[in-house]
Length: 248
Ligand code: G3P
Ligand code: MG
Image (cartoon, rainbow, N blue to C red; front, side, top):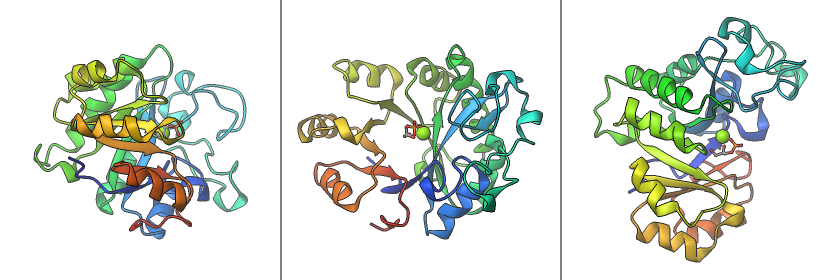
């Protein structure tokens, strides 16, 4: 039911390195993590890149947006200086680069499709088609070697389903809505991903009894991790690779 690792490094290296960069993936590896979550968005020219915020200002200095910037221009932008001087020069990686890095190092991926508003379907379609091509050599039954898509955006996941039906999908919900069963069925999703802060043991049980995988974000203390695991949660991502080991 959950063929994936239990503890997943959020945005690559959690809060220990600049999120959604190759340095973050390396940080996860250095802490012994072989499972990662990261965010994927389309550039102006429709190339999937790793990025969380649609607007610049937090991880990328200056004013501007991902949707108005080409992948070539994004690729030379600094995505590490905001974090610390040690990471000055760290770039915005393309999704393809990160998949190649992760596959080379045996890192399993939860690919969060994070569309810029208005580009939900296009982002789902493009990311899914590229993923299908990058994993064409993996059998569709070999789930632990295929990535798991997730998204808060239902239309993005529907588009991913159409473009790459054999890449599994998890539906992300900040709070589990009353419509969750119908939505999961329509997506043919295998897992529900939700904010641990709003989850209750009762809702966790309902999701597990319905036969779905259950994933929580973002759990940063061992005590809370133990608690939600005792409710039947299958896996969670964490920012604190230093506090919660990969073999927790
Ligand atoms: O995929 C889980 C988590 O990453 C969702 O929230 O905002 O960190 O992408 P966010
Ligand atoms: Mg994310």
